[in-house]
Length: 623
Image (cartoon, rainbow, N blue to C red; front, side, top):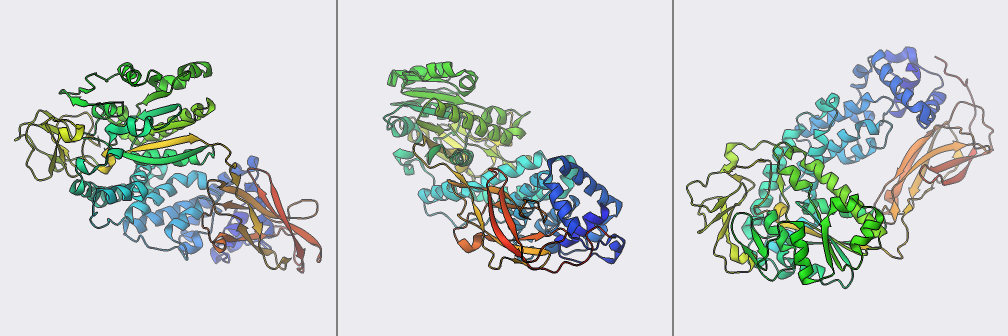
């Protein structure tokens, strides 16, 4: 096995076996290559082969030899799982040295990572490669110049900049759950990425927002307090509104992508701007039908003079506006059986479903570090809820939130806390305060509450104009909201409609575009083209590619192939695939067959190749 795996590894790199491994030279090597490739495709053999590969690596002290290879050579090898560890450690070193533009041969770092994620040991190292990919994305971020106005800033954020928040969330979540044995491979990236996210991205983002934001610049169609009249009553059909506490815009975009991938829904993303403070007791009332909102101190905001701090009270407000309305919690809805869900929806035109996992996790000091995990769980819960509503023939669903949040992994020190103790405040929290007059202090902004609620309330809302917090008591400090930022104030309005008559998504197809279909050596290179780019109706597909005889017996190793290219240029969807013939006699002039086997659908595409080589040498593993 040592000889087989070493010869396989150096063949992958297209290198001769070094002199230090001369005792393990196989002649010829083709059967060894075919053996490894085929064994990996056998479920009952794969795990044993991987275990043996680890033992062989240790047995021959392979690290010393393989470390000498250039990274473009190393990137081709997947004979041993420890190869991935060498590559990941190399990538980490490059990123820590700010060598973001480094290339692996002709590949970018992203392309190299994408390649490794498709190879033999990807399941064991997927999480580490995703950490590397997230780090590359964040470290490459370059802040733009000053935005001209609020509209431009919001447009930039809702179309592309939100992805930095998503990437940071993914980076933190993956790093927090990484296998302790693998932590050293990505050590140091945490602080480098954290500093870049906070100081290059978040600081710039919050500063730009506060430079151009004022309540009067937010159009009525995008004011959160007009949600019901703008989005709910405009639909002349049964509408279910799902309100998830602290479900910020970037998370909703991930939910949208997940739903779109199912080819059952048609979705459209819109957005609203919350008022200030961006907190639950202001946001939840704003999402109800209202003619006037009023703040009465502490955490009491009324809707048309009615309190609304429970689901029951919110249901009463909904029914006062439209008798055919209902409200309950997502958790209760999910725990119901089908008949109970039907009864809840029966005869109702408007149904509000409330969900609260992110905020309740983030606002506890004991659990705030799990807030990104709570986001992932929320996406799954909302997706499940929408799927159940689809099965009940609900054709119009709105997903929104009361507010967003800011989360930073690094501990907050005293330098990041703004002391406003010299100013008289009515109420003080970490990201906002109420006062009778504006707080005049560098780094603090103020808005009149009446301008935010649409009334004559003279109270002022004060807030940091950066990502810092006020010196104030609070259970959590890394998870905060209530202030003025894109992350806290831009909330999603995801409209999900049941798709009717849409063509079902199909698995991406590939075909053989090799110009000369003659086998002239035991190393066969074929050219495979993905027919169409990946899209909503053409989904990623996994293939196994190999050569067979007329009896469908394999005469080569099996090479995995992933059809995952989204490029619209046909030439960019062509890949070379290298196959190694096994050592056995072949009949010149006879036709053999290239098989493109879709491992998910079991559909096969084949093309004929004529054998035209001179067979020489033995057929075993001669050492």
